[in-house]
Amino acid sequence: MRALILGLALAVALISTASADPPSFRAGVTRITVHDTTPFDVLIAYPTEAAEASVEEGPIKLVASRDAPVAAGARFPVVLFSHGGSGPGTPLVHGDLLLHLARQGFIVIAPFHPGTAKPFVDRPRQIHKALDSVLADPRFSKRADPDRMGMVGFSFGGAVTLIVAGATIDLAHLSAYCHDHADDSRACGGIATDGSWAKVPPSRKSDDALPLKALVLLEPYGAPIEQKGLGSLDLPILIYSASQSDLKAEGNILALAKALPRSPRQIAVPGSHFVFVDPCSPILATTATEICSDPPDTDRAAIHQRFKREISDFLRANL
Image (cartoon, rainbow, N blue to C red):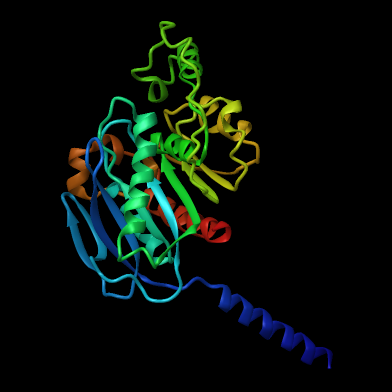
């Protein structure tokens, strides 16, 4: 009888484990244009049942089904994404992660942020506009579930992610930090340290902060945000850092981790700041050496296999 009970318990456990496994989809990808002060494109990666093929985006190749129908079934959680750099940039260099999330059952919304003189203001607005446009699109309006929404941001996009969630930017704090940490060139390039920002008041927390349920920050730019600007962010957060990054952890990643009202989960990986960019093709490696170069003995492909799984598991558990 005892053996029978144990056998039944094991069978139930196996069934429960199998039922908890996420559905596996193929990745669909499309683009839309959003009208703003400066119009910008948005990459949307989403679950589909259509066969994947090679999709060329300049020097970057994605394996996905372009403009395919969204997979049938239940509504899918939404993941917003903000790429790095305060100037114009592209989410395509994170395509492996975005498509992985699509295959795991998420609808991913990733703007191509255009250059702007006020990125701390304009980029969060672009995220809002991108989300509104996707939710109004008939292909996604009945497939996306805005009640289950998270966000992922890399580098400057990490700061954007925090702002979208309700954090407050303090330029006076950033200026003072950079005055005392001239060695943090990644965080402080172009930042005024002559005292001209000393009386700039912190931006008020956005009244239209999105109801995000979880955040993932990849080497986030944390220097512009003081502890009191993070008080409302009581939600699950996963923070990644790179052990050989030139973005000083003490004033960015570690400062954020200490200041957040809820202790985040922290994961460190080997490599430089750009280890979170997809492994580069030979063509891209010749034209974008900074983002494609790694310290010796860094296996970027293996790191990506690991953190893609960790990120999708984290988001699935919290959305």
